[in-house]
Length: 145
Ligand code: COA
Image (cartoon, rainbow, N blue to C red; front, side):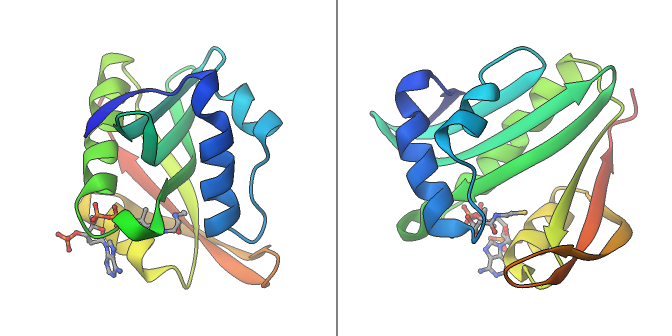
């Protein structure tokens, strides 16, 4: 497995993983925007197969994680761990002050993942998500820059 920047060639695979994982998936056009400036968009690759990916938008010294997902058949083998570790390295290089994200209140695997990587609960947005309606937990990792 190697972690590298996403290219346009991987967008259809990533859109397919989005459809598999989320009730309101990002489409190819939304994902392509993350190939532009002010985004970190990296994937864990096995040859030309995308195993997982993470996207982060940054503005000045603030980072906003937009999506994190791993192929269902490849979970629990450390892929998200590796993606978040690389995202942190890159965020440190960019001198970001913090990374933040929203996660469904009932998404226990994701909340455990973010806690493991030092993210702490910073608030809650009531009924933020649809299909199904659910609160969002805001989680933030201070980077100390
Ligand atoms: N239950 C509880 N904790 C879990 C978990 C599960 N099923 N899966 C992962 N974790 C947590 C654990 O803390 C784990 O560390 P540990 O193995 O030392 O206990 C840590 O995440 C890293 O596990 P890893 O194997 O790297 O995670 P993964 O590659 O399986 O990916 C997700 C984790 C959340 C990205 C994956 O389950 C996924 O794609 N889910 C669907 C999409 C999604 O919900 N994305 C998050 C949107 S905010």
